[in-house]
Image (cartoon, rainbow, N blue to C red; front, side, top):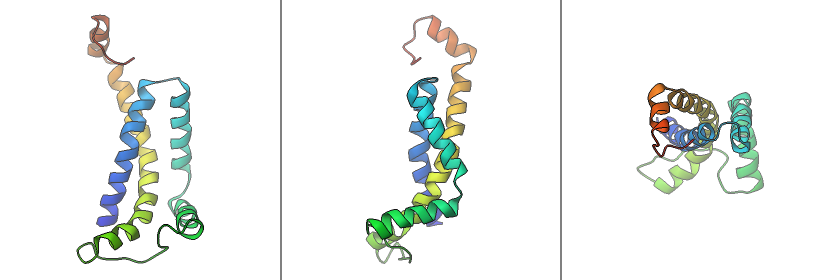
Length: 127
């Protein structure tokens, strides 16, 4: 349960800002970068992303442990260091998928009639 919670928090921290930013700047360079990055995140399998992150953060940099588990209530700092790498793996892949959903939803809402009417009346909405 803790892995799922950490993963969804990381995914939402990635997806909401990236998806909204990409939709509000449709067709610009940042939109293309976010779309390509999210497509890469969707295309990479979870297990491969995990291996790459272990190689980077555990083996190369030595910042996080490669395996293990610590209970949250007995050692919160140890729990965080052990759950961060698997949570990041789950969160990056889920964040890439959610970024595409958020971008699509924002674009759908921005194309609705009431938004066009508000813009035509001079409302300070981002374009």
